[in-house]
Image 1 (cartoon, rainbow, N blue to C red):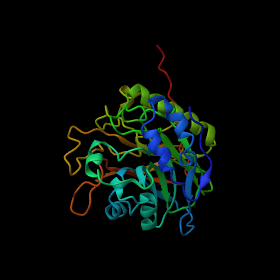
Image 2: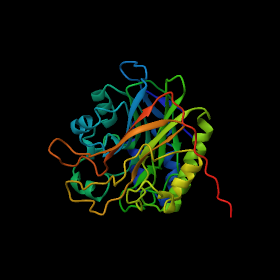
Image 3: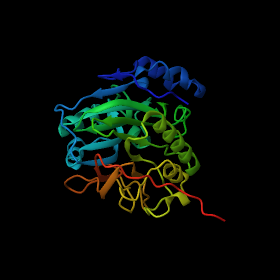
Image 4: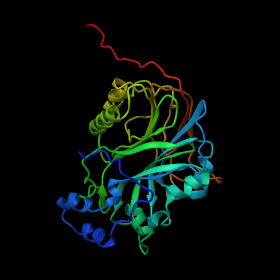
Length: 344
């Protein structure tokens, strides 16, 4: 496994384009050699909010897979009511999203600060659709990752790797070759009782057993990094494709939920039932849809869960994932539910 990343940077350095060109043509077993030469894979971009606001008694938290974060103005409008955004699939310097720093643009529009970590350095233009749509363009930077945006001060940011890296370098998804691997971002808020935020993205080309293993790695890192008396809000895209949206017994088909339940996490108070996928303007994906996106809390009270349609003012999809949101009552500690085996 890769090590937890704690080094901070005001701006992540752009990878050497010659290195990336060489990596795109390298043998499948060369991933680690090239990844070690990309500083952006080993640092956290950390920028404070423009105004240092104290955290109030209630905090509206949204988690969203923004699918590249291509649509700036509609995305800002969609997230306007959030105090914290746990963001996955956000680009920096990718042709498919206008070669923008999408996280900075969104954070500035919302008056937020951010922490950002690189999940993948893209060696091409993206998936097969994006390669076709942007065939005559180039990436200026080529970073793709996850972030936490907040109206309040973010402290102690880290990147938590969830796999050994290199899976996508070997061509698991056709021509979408990448350096890096799945990861989660974590940071804490400046509150009297510590409250940590974690934005996670589990592997999409996988199965339930592998998602369970990634959950175990995530829990192990949380136990290592976060004090036992701290509250935790965990959210993101968990790619739980077998789940139709029920909150009742998802662990029956996804070991991930048993892993999180045994670690003290709850999902009943902070999720609305139902799927979180939607069809994009190009007609994909198609129903039936699954609930891929979740919020979890540990030692923190949550209320008012909601699934928010990820559409612009005209009703057109701006991601293939909806936003999931809930209100967290800060400073209130909820007693953990301990699973007890029934006697035979």
